[in-house]
Amino acid sequence: MQKKSLHQPFLLTQLEVPFYCRVVRKHFFRDRVYQLKQHNNLITMTYVLEFGILQHQNTDAPKYIMNIEESTTFEWLIKQQRLVGFKFPYRGNYKEFYADQTDLIQLRMRLGSKMTFVNLAQTYKYLSTLEAGSFGQVTTNECCFNNKKVAIKHILLNGKKDQQKTIENEIQILRSIKHPRLVEIYEVFKTELYYQIVTEFIEGDNLKQLIFNKSNQIKNEEILEIMQQLLEALTYLHRNQILHRDIKPANIMYHNNKLKLIDFGLACYDGKQLIENPNCGTEGYVAPEVLNVHQTKINYDFKVDVFGAGCVLYMLLTGTKFQQSNQSNASFQKNKTYQNSENSQLFELVKIMTRPNPLDRPSSFQILELIRLIKENCAYDISLWYGSAFNLSNSTHSYQTASTARHIHTSKNQKSVCSFNSARGIGQNLSKQIQK
Image (cartoon, rainbow, N blue to C red):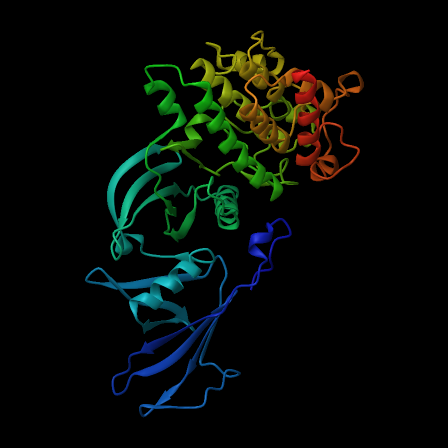
């Protein structure tokens, strides 16, 4: 059994309630009935019936014991669009078991976050292709036994160990998070050619499509609502030591005023920034410290996502990329020195979210609280808030080290970070000054 990663958030460390159900293994002369128990990372099946009479269960000596690991494979048995059983490898052979569909659906939901399944085509019917590229494709599919629509990311394996490790990292992160603003993973399948990640299907368009399809400029009230929900997602990720590293409109789904952050292909746990794709992201949304990481060799932190969110805000306001350029390399370089000349409230917010020095850039916690203050008071003075929250005269021009980044949320000496309460206190004091 694999040990739990030290980087996994608290959600995975919570003890699971044991699950029990009755399963049947068919034999030529007489079927055998077992009690299946699934608890945390272990499945046991104990023989409970003999000649139709319930016998004493010896739970210390189950017939079948299976450790659940990410590499463990399971195949579900489906007949006439009904989930009827499962089979798994055991001592060189496949063992088949049958059970009630209601129990099997519950078991499948619990195992979906723990192991890999095989034979996706038997479970999901193809509907359409949403996106295709060098990585593979994203399709919409329908579950055969409950008619539920899902999105499936088919990631092509190129045979390289590093690439497989990157895919497994994405799966691990998706399995460790659960939040209404984040896409939810259901289960994972694997073939010789593909990893297939099954997630919830999200109705509507992404922000990139929404911006280009809008005939009129998006109102400030809606922009603030979008940004609040995005920062709620980032705050959750950062509290759980996860960097997304690819915040952009195409990775943000928005429908009926509900936002979902998707695509965790470049995400990593804090502490692994320089190990896993250190220089990554999408042109026009990449923070300067990420662009410069090969030169500085200094670890960056969660504020790269704040920078990306600031670029998204700029896109919502203008309909164009942040400091867009016709030359790709020049566009990357201009992002480092951008200074916004607009003096409106939301452009001022863009300005502080895209500060070149991450020490001068607020955290996701601070920006979320600031957006709430702006929604409460449409005349809220962002410059005054920023001046009180940051002592720019003492600003250092070096970036944070890895050790500093790991303590970004709690360090009393980190001048560029403050708690919700302190941000709220600053906001309330400044509101009184403004009103006077």
